[in-house]
Structure formats: structure tokens, C-alpha cells
Image (cartoon, rainbow, N blue to C red; front, side):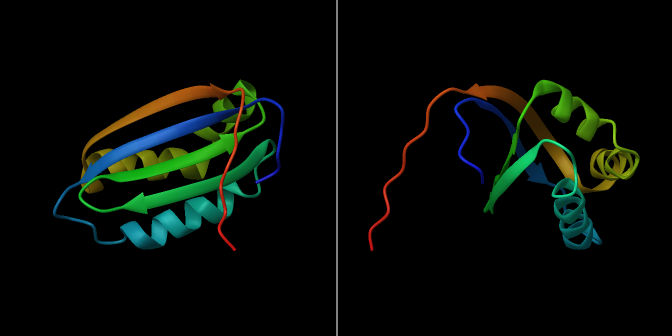
Length: 103
């Protein structure tokens, strides 16, 4: 991810249903598609009993455009219909970051 002074994070937290057929393929397609979107900065994801995916964006307009992207709309509908029991989306403005890395 590019280091920016200020940017936005979309935090998608979810629990999956029993029917996950096709989920991994769609998730991979959406990640590849997101990487081509204007304003996309990066993505981090983890799944255990609860899944958390955080995508990073340059602006609120970039997030809005991604939410309305036609293939992404299809994935959202499929997610509500088949793959998720519950999800929550949070959009946050990132104003500062730091990290630790042990070499």
C-alpha cells in the first residue's frame, strides 16, 4: 500500500453461511478488480469464525465508485443471497499510521 498522509479504509466484517460455493473464486475476482480501480491503495484480509477485509482508498469518491461498480454489485447481491449470514461495513478516515517489523 502506498503511504499517504490521509486516506480511507473500508472495513468489511462478516460471518459466512453454510453455502460458500463459488465464494473463493468471486473473492479473488473482486480483489483483482479492486486493484484496477482508480483510487485503490491496498487490501488486507483474514478469516476465521469472523472474516475481516480492509481495503484502502484515496477518497470517498473512489469508495463510492467501487461500491457502484457493476461486477462488484453482482458480487454484493450474491453475498447477501448466498454467502453471508451477517456483515457490517465501516468507512474510516485514516489520519496516522505506524508499524513494527522484526527482521
